[in-house]
Image 1 (cartoon, helix red, strand yellow):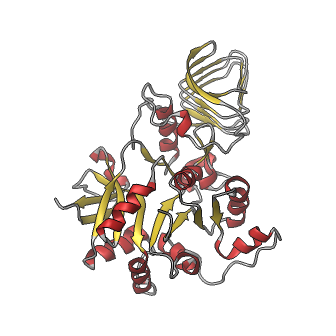
Image 2 (cartoon, rainbow, N blue to C red):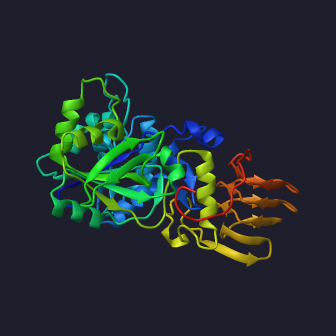
Image 3 (spheres, one colour):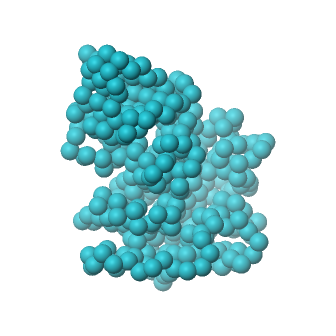
Length: 368
């Protein structure tokens, strides 16, 4: 299945909307789920789908991201390709050439254009585009197979959600034959309850054609705002592929918090076994329903707990002081809660900073 497929991972987010949670770290490396980081979900999906290599598309603090991924995701049978910097990592020289000149990347389509020499080639028939800030587990194999059988120019993943949240995403609609008829990024007045799940597979030649056609025009340099609408207007065959189960776009700290509560709901959005484990993988994790000091929480085996932890997620190295109470919260790696503290609906950062979040119910499901 991997033959002919180039997998590209868009990982340029700065995390500006994440508040203190995003300060001093790249958004793709924001810890998630008590075990890993946001970027790990797409990489874990790619590896499990038999896609042995993923091309990194990033410009913001790229060296920091590459160094991290080299430590965590280069192994036998799977690796991240670093484009113009890949040879330096493969040879272990530690030398990286200066970044290419020119204007900064202005959008996701620019990222594809900048890495075009590593994205397209005579042996590449499809380009699978992924994002580094989405939480879901998915086998890309059936999506790629369906795309190939159909002969479509593009097959995009979609999910049905509560219509009141559609304005936050790319709205899509299809005719009875399954062809895309509408694509509107963040519509003011949604007319559909279907949204683009932000991963898709392109026919490589058609994608290259539209990128060349758009480059140099007055456009927003974006896949969702420019490339897909241009393909739709051009009469290309664009089909949809439904995403079952949980899928979450972690765009804000509120959604980050709600997505964690969904992990410890009565019917969790993802099981512990589905969570990629890159942060201290030697430490076991488990959802504890009821135990002394712990109620319905995802906890690491090394948790030091002198108080009460309820409906929360804790990363390895977390410590809860004597008599403290933590509810509906996330404790990042090494976070310490002082003795007697009372924390509700918050994120406790590594340095002990408490980032409060509007209270939310621990429900499961996407976009809640």
